[in-house]
Length: 171
Image 1 (cartoon, rainbow, N blue to C red):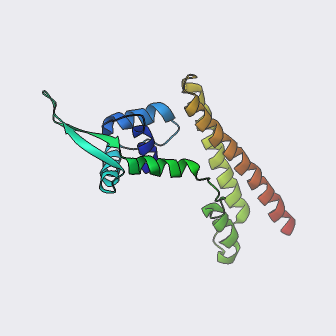
Image 2: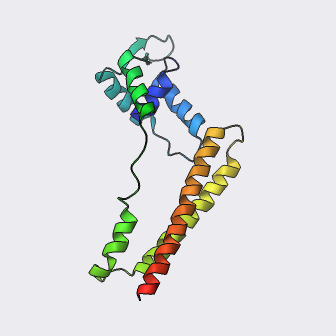
Image 3: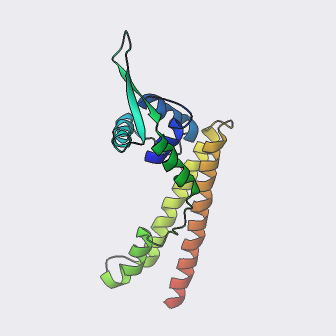
């Protein structure tokens, strides 16, 4: 959450609730929405680390609010983040670990694990399809997020099929 908040502050000062609304609008319903408390805790940490600065702004009919802006150190952190690539494959996968150790435990059947996981992925795919239909066509970022998640799920479903074929050959 740290770097996306910095990125939103790169366009100009904002307060925590405003940043929460911006994230919700940008990412749509498919992305797990942070609560406003999480946002303010993260903003506090960013301020302590010198990546943003906050300024209290008086409001006549409401409590004061704190408006944050990006520091040069924050801008540099964003530059570094945008330059980094995401290169770690999903090698540390909890499901695969279950699949690998199941025969040693005698507590779970590998094919049953695959079938349960397949049902979960298919349910998630249905839910994402409903979200895609409900999401505004104008919000291309949210549509791309949903599409990416569905493509990953399809790849996971294909991989489960491959695992099942391999394991059935071993029997």
